[in-house]
Image (tube, rainbow, N blue to C red; front, side, top):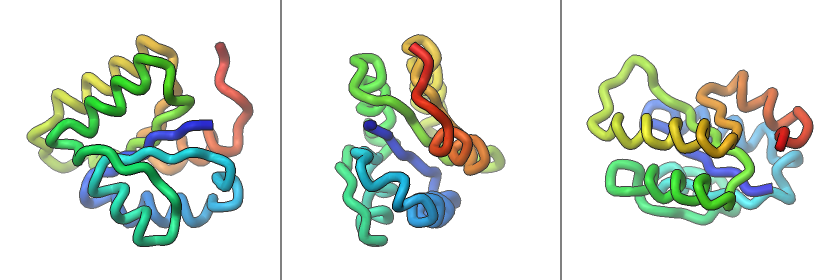
Length: 122
């Protein structure tokens, strides 16, 4: 299983807490993350492959991985109340996940269901 993880700045601690809570379930999962999120995850002691920071291309790198079937799931803890200058990149990533039928969670409740659920359809 290959999972990409992304979190807006205000959601990074929540992402780390989620991953630590589910550490046993993720032990055989390959994690990929945008740069800053990946740094937080690595500092918490989890193994992660860090890509570019979201605003400078990390979201696009993850979208490319989704488009080429290199991901099984994306977990993106978004801050729906904040302003994000790279919002077009976020929309592009969501569109690519929809086009290629890659499950995407945008909040902890959905991510929890995906982590505890069965394999994706297709």
